[in-house]
Image (cartoon, rainbow, N blue to C red):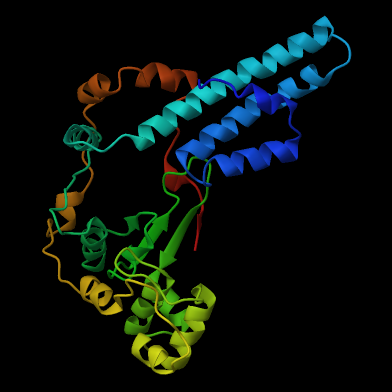
Length: 287
């Protein structure tokens, strides 16, 4: 745990928020660590400002609050540390080994190949039923069905059907790709002052990005390379598998799983393992 900023104990809640925001931009690891500091300070403020010493009951309650915060903070800091660690070849090999032990096949996209494009191509070819991803680029790559929130424990999975989306949005396939580009992709910036709702209206009215730009009403942001994005979405992909039999799940290898996850059986018995929390497909799916 980082050294506590003791001067924060004398601040009001509003002053604490202001101090945190000025210390680091939002949504960075530094800002999250600062928020954890605030959580530690909050239960201490009444104690510092009290005119009389707290009784044993109040001290016990405060001690419990701080103990809980210490545990939560350590867990959060550990998670943040893991997220900030760079991905290595060893991590990839371990993931592939785990996937294989679970009975599934895996494929590593080569340099210059988008993994979302591979998954979308397997889906459009009918070799798989859907793509599980949080990246909406699966859809302009040609994926038929996209499952989101697949790894969200206790959450609700969302199924996006691209054919249904085209019908309800009243767009052609090309118009849909242009809409995705205007909403933001990994390969191009967007138009200034154009959000998703405006982008949909513009594509429905004008049909293409070229026609939208021809009105002279909208200014591209820097790196607005929409033609490059289109070409990437249109690339043909050499499929790593040619039939559904090649990707059909096989029996788990318990001996390998036991070596990779030595605590999985005891965790499952205690009911605290997120890994063994159940089949995500057992829940209802929102369309």
